[in-house]
Amino acid sequence: MIGTLLIPRPLLVKAATIYVDKTSVTGSHYLQPKRRAEAIAALAQIFDVNPIVAQIRLDEMYPPANGQEMF
Image (cartoon, rainbow, N blue to C red):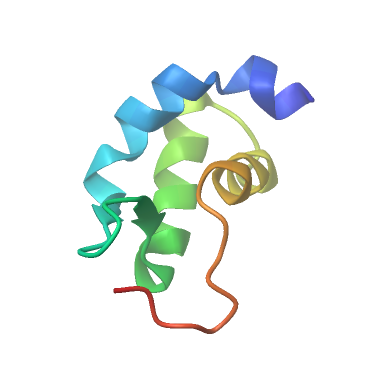
């Protein structure tokens, strides 16, 4: 709940744009696993929140692939 207040969805989408890619098949957005830590650190700094808050919010918007490769 607090993540939604501290990092509103429209601002998160704009701030995370450089870390997010689209799948070639469905066009859905995803966060590459190798860039997740970088995105968390950047968003924590941008929104002046604890990194765990940024991680939770990113996981809500762009769920981890659970070890599966996203194309």
